[in-house]
Image (cartoon, rainbow, N blue to C red):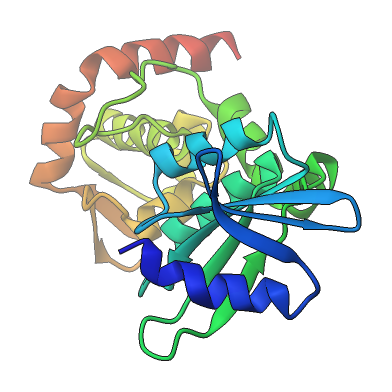
Length: 232
């Protein structure tokens, strides 16, 4: 119950010099110190509703925290994503141990600098922009799962597959590269990420059954790719 969070959090902030009381207005735990007002929303779990309620409290108090019992997945990626959202909103997070009621401040109610965050994720941004700029077909539908995404790598692999088919279904990487125009043709053949190829003898590759199936499955995409490749 949320009320079991109240006493340990209240004692924690009282030790820091805050004057505290519960249910002031409709705020679970309200505190003041040095002219600053603080609201703490006590919740069983950190979900959208609790974040929404905390954000609304920002209209009337200086700082807002959400207090929850320490979750088992506190250090998981999904929970870290929730904490990131709190930091962007300037909402603090307090966790309380379920057994011995220890209180820990996971994040303070301070808005994170977005420029700094973007700087820390520059490599991911570059990878995103590179992937987008290297795609030709642009046939993916957003918001779907369980479907094959047409990535820049898959596009190159299809061109390699098609070139190998044009060469009679088996050839050396250098010949595939010449026909496909894909610089990394040898690496794609060697990596065989989709199980389309087989290195049946030194320096020679041939198409497997899955490769022929892919030629049919991605026939429309290949038409676009080959048109793009011809224009290039």
